[in-house]
Length: 193
Image 1 (cartoon, one colour):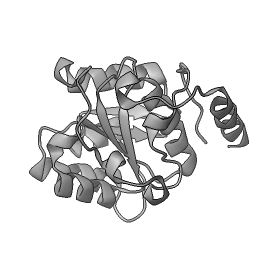
Image 2 (cartoon, helix red, strand yellow):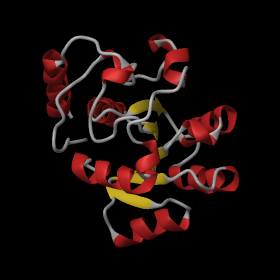
Image 3 (cartoon, one colour):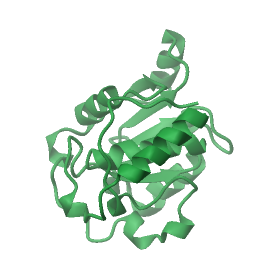
């Protein structure tokens, strides 16, 4: 875990000055991602990688918060949900099943440390569209997100007021900063503890 924190601190030092959302470019330009992840380090990794690819990212700490966010703000606000599997309050399986009930067209991609076929099948059975193993391989994640969201979500203008813009950085979960404030060089993969 220490080497991941050191890598992230190094990435922070390499960051360029603040950019606006419209200046963000990358393979995921314009894609809006909601990530449910309870591990601080994994949230930091996502927060470093996805905005560097041009995605608009909001992190929440468990499946219940993700479910509430989609229910309260509408499923059309998000293009894809990245869902950790093992979380407190509500795990990723239950959150995916419940999301299917009222947002059946919102793709949910499971993220788990378990790469076994049984785990992949369990994710699919819960209503997820795909399963990716940790540590996160950036290219595999980007490819899967693009496969799920299609061309319509890419390169569009940001919404007038996204949840991140309505939320102050002090109210975001630990490890999630407003991604529009920074831009980092994309890394091919990241190691998570």
